[in-house]
Length: 341
Image 1 (tube, rainbow, N blue to C red):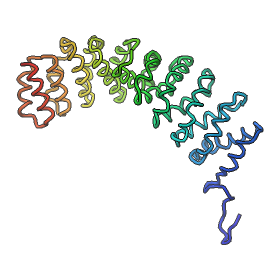
Image 2 (image 1 turned 120 degrees about the horizontal axis):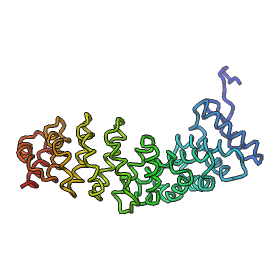
Image 3 (image 1 turned 45 degrees about the horizontal axis):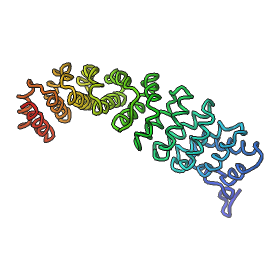
Image 4 (image 1 turned 90 degrees about the vertical axis):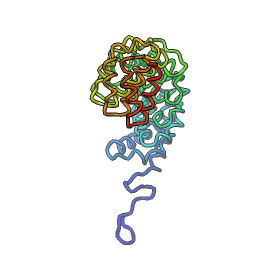
């Protein structure tokens, strides 16, 4: 309709894009399922066609209440709405976490659970603390879904940032997910397993060490970092578990990427700190890294050679300790020299 000066005027309660939020909220409160379904579809259409998810964040409590009603036959749409709204405002969806988890547990085999896990993963990325108490329930859902749901694995990885011990019951699920799809599940599963290894929690198996070692020279840098980092975390706890695959880190020590060389040297140093002979397969590569162009690579190579008591490195270490332009390299070279003496 026209305003006093001829401009178009939005109906009362509508936003600039014509969003009638009060009408949608009222429709969600209707007793007739058909009206509620129509409201949910209005939200879905606005999200899918006009990217207006943010405007419908106030509907989250009402959508959650509808999700909890098993008689409703459009819960798939509700789950998708909640997942999209969580992407816009995870902290607004966080208070509904307990209800969403309960519905996922009660309906683990249903297709809508994928969207529910997507919703929870988005919340966990921002607020991992609210998922800590639900880690066991999420694990139960994943076990019933054959353990490889990518969103569920991400939830566990986020939770492990807040409290690694909370995901102890999920260790086997994470290991199986890594084996099932290393590329898709690798980054979150490896990060979660690494944090678990650094904690006081029990690990039911270390079979994932071989899987991580196989990814240490992967083309994808992020996956490569996570794999080597996980090996380093395990080595800090149990160097003998990583010693059998130490030779497989040789490719990472020779990688074109300096960060890969650096973190590989860290992983090797942690293994060698507990098992000196583990340095033997990569001794030559570590010696070469003492002349690397990047200070952090040289510094980490010094530490690995010092732990490995590699006498052949002594003259190079002495030179680095007195002449290297980088203070961190000089410090670590001096430390390694003392280890050899």
